[in-house]
Length: 324
Image 1 (cartoon, helix red, strand yellow):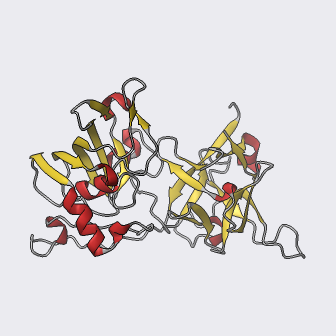
Image 2 (image 1 turned 30 degrees about the vertical axis):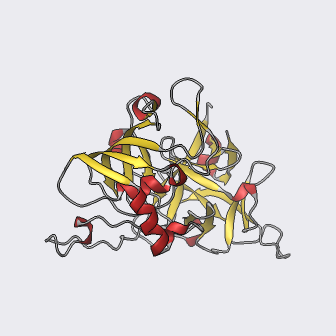
Image 3 (image 1 turned 90 degrees about the horizontal axis):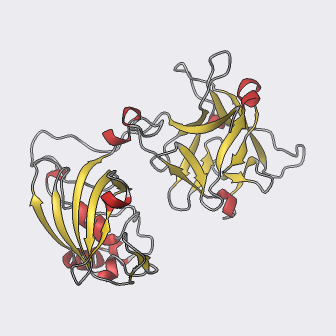
């Protein structure tokens, strides 16, 4: 769209993950495989007994062993894989599907099947393994899925055997960095509750970053409605100063809401008139967002719209709109 700018995501003040880089094998807990999940999501696997039963059903045979730490919860896994059904038929091939690029998911967050979360935490970066996944913790519960070749179905609860290669597992993968063609986060991943800014891709004529800003005054003042407009304003605190809390946001990975740091009870809302405001979390479709690493955009889960502004808004400031 000519004469327009989109809004990308930049992280600030990110918190260090509680990982101690120990000097010896005995001191570093990740030198032995540890299977964990970030949240139970009502899955039995979060309970120790249920997790052991699930883990015991997953068979991991590493065929190309490497040295170093095992992949673990909260890291991002970038993987290539081939999937074979119970008859040995090749039904999935990530290289064919993604044109040679790895797929990615955050370990222990149920972004792939429970079997995959269990398997990759028993592997190291660079390793290749043959992984058997029983259908009830892999394809179980999912609607029938199409094979990567043709229009045949992979039926629910199908047992699968995968050949999985972990290209990388890390908190800040090299593959995600700007120099490798990924997003503006430059290797710093969007973690739950980590504060960040929404920044226009182009600066104003003064060279200032223009960022998404919550208006601290109620839209219908003096009436208190809890609705606060959101607009593009110059960034405060860019040169090492304290950031304006009305410009800081964080993401909840459980319900996919974007919270204002200024008032965490308020979440971003894409309105029916395609503008943005903050309002208390009511579970509306317009209040659910996820990050697209390829396009550097935060997209509404339902409408799939990103945030955009016209060129004159970048210069003068003003309302942000929802764009497809």
